[in-house]
Length: 254
Length: 61
Image 1 (cartoon, rainbow over the protein chains, first blue to last red):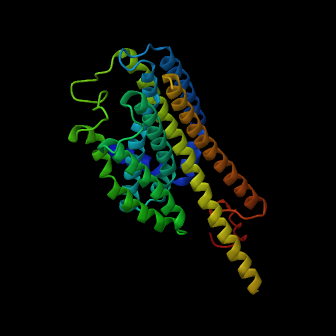
Image 2: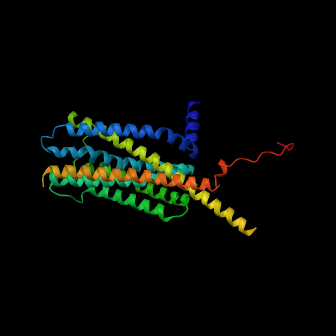
Image 3: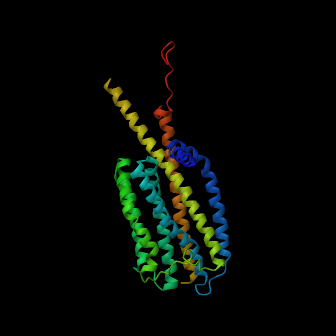
């Protein structure tokens, strides 16, 4: 009974018009909470002491780790949406993975750039082609490929189906990325926050990291809802222009 | 180069990319809203937003 109610509620939300109404209501709150979390997170990040080995460069962790986490989470959101496209053929699922791709590309770029800027003083090099760095770079290229594919095709539902297949095929890269540091010998350190046996990071660094991760995650969801709303509007503009052209054509025939 | 350079550059790159992303999404939304308003002003509405014609008096429901 409650399960069917939940499904009804979910399918109500999946209606684009209802989604737009909900987005208008929740976006100001999401933006405000994101801004507050960033203010608190940045204050905590800059008021912590340096690490005994890494010194002040540990501050790069507060932006690098959340960006890297989001690069994977964004692709996971896209993969779930791709299932929605292929299984239920739902237009809102198409809109969701199309809108998420540029956001994922941006967060992956931040992860790559900040990782490089952290690597130079700590490892002595800007870049190495080890398993972790290479798999993140491949993820970045996949985001760019998906953006290009979506822009190259005129028919949005056909573009969505092709993208969905590519997204699901590319999802194999996510566990490779996550476990690359355990499976291969890499210059990049192994997992230290989410791991069996608990976090190995001192609470002094863990709390600012968690607040910044929450701020980045909420920023992603705020931008994702905004980008989905923009995409729905874009499709409505296209549909209305097509309708206007058809009406004009009919009038000319008369 | 000191560590300050790496920390400052990392935060600057993050701020620039994030702000560009926020502005891009925001400007895209404004442009689409403007287009929808122009279409509405020229009398082109979505079929679901168009007013249904009144049934003729005495006609069947």
